[in-house]
Image (tube, rainbow, N blue to C red):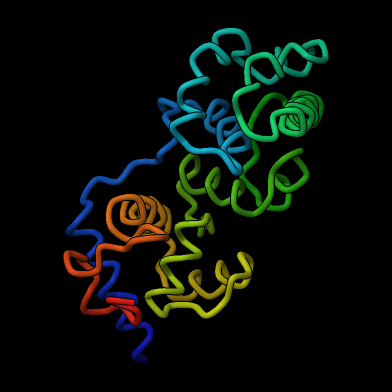
Length: 211
């Protein structure tokens, strides 16, 4: 086992001890369709904001068909407090229309299929594959990019390159929970402006502790 792999394994273990029961920050209640839509909405928007608007959104639009048949401006009214809501509404309508016409209202699990849906990039696709289908996947959000660079696991700001590197280091069955733990860790300890290095559970393995 090389040094980087040993370090990664130690980080995984420490995070598991700190956060034994991590959950997705998007509260979809186990509903695949809702998590799919919420994941698209979450780009450049906090999970808290998406969670706030979701109950009313899904009461009005419970499935892909209802969104695909909605009039222009109707969906926008429900998501207007979310960043880039006009573009997201357009993508969501396109995605839902494709779900109805091509996938019989079922969220696909293959990466190539997910990437054909409006508003879905690799980050969202990996979230869907991991949280809905249990297939793993590295969700390269801002926390993941910042923290894995600080820890010295990666040396890149490119999300695809980071995904490929971490995919080799982290076992598939641990990837989804690792990403959820990184988000929790980023919010509680390793924030962008003032990381709490002294009290950090990963102090011993961090390349930039105290910096």
